[in-house]
Length: 93
Image (cartoon, rainbow, N blue to C red; front, top):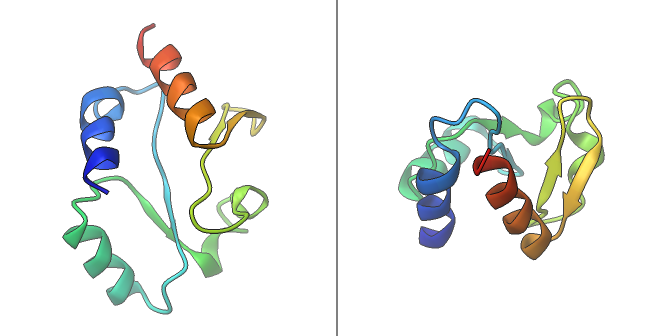
């Protein structure tokens, strides 16, 4: 997780054109919050029960799942390597 936190801090934090969202499959909010805090996740967490309401259920295919979605909900990158490449592309603009 330290690599993900470093990547977020370097390439995503403060960039209004992209956001990382953590989809939590923990059984309760308190556990999810504690894990995110321990892991130094500063980005939004959406609980499993809220994925559908947030429009994210179609992107959660297991743990972990890496997906970049555009503003219209279209998947523009899938898989860890493709997502990393897309993040670099987006954040260079």
